Length: 376
Image 1 (tube, one colour):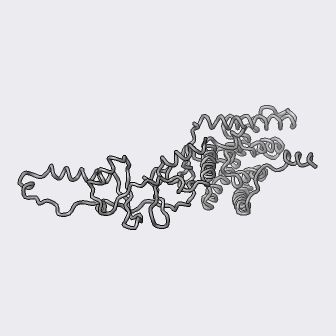
Image 2 (tube, rainbow, N blue to C red; image 1 turned 90 degrees about the horizontal axis):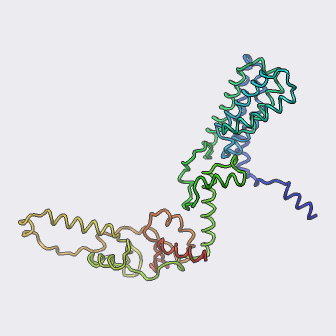
């Protein structure tokens, strides 16, 4: 029994089980693509009576385009060039060695087609079937001559076009865009790996034809981010926050706020009411702009305007520069939930509340300190 289990683990299925949604989507897409390609074959049947022979390898192309569209083997260049070039190469073989046996010709056609596809960076498994089919059906296909290449390229292009439209309608990416991964898919975590490092990893594990360096980078970054979130899920915001609050009230004079910024070297101060509830924030940059505008206004006044100007009756306070609160969480919120916001550099601090009362703040420095402690 253990032997059978070990054998099953080695020889059994490796791929993960597809969801019903994925199964149905791939089935419908392949059916639509092949139906349209079949209609074109029927339209040219009068001119190219044996074009139906070319229809067989397209079934394998449809599997790649609609079932594994993210694979480099399924990209448009691979589909069109990987189907057309093997047909051209096989025709040249048949023309150059007309007396060679069919078995030898088939071996040369498939082996050479693989080498050419690899050289052109257009590896496409159905291309091997195209080369083999051209040799085995030479009696029917050779009368078509070089016109054989036109329907092969056209039918492959039709499948690709249907794949592009179909995947776009389903909201699934198909066309591979190197170095331009969508921001929505790009994790906040940045890998300390160059593109060359990623390529070496793919070669090391013999996955160069299954993944691109960009796709591997996105996957590794997402895995790293998930790992960090999992390690930090047991840490609450209350455990990480800085509890020694430096806050101001809405009526705190701006001169006093300037002194607080000078002493504590912070970029933002929370504003709380008499009950300790967070109602806003004052940015160091806003205070600097306010001071600079006042300085310039005084410089532009002439002597007569300065003598006639009356002293301000009301002192400027925090409420005059206060902005709305940016983000807040409860004490029990897992720290991992905040990584995206902190990594994006869009927040100065995250307020930590107990109910509605401000009890602390979390900055990127607090998160870095926590990460360092978890790694030791």
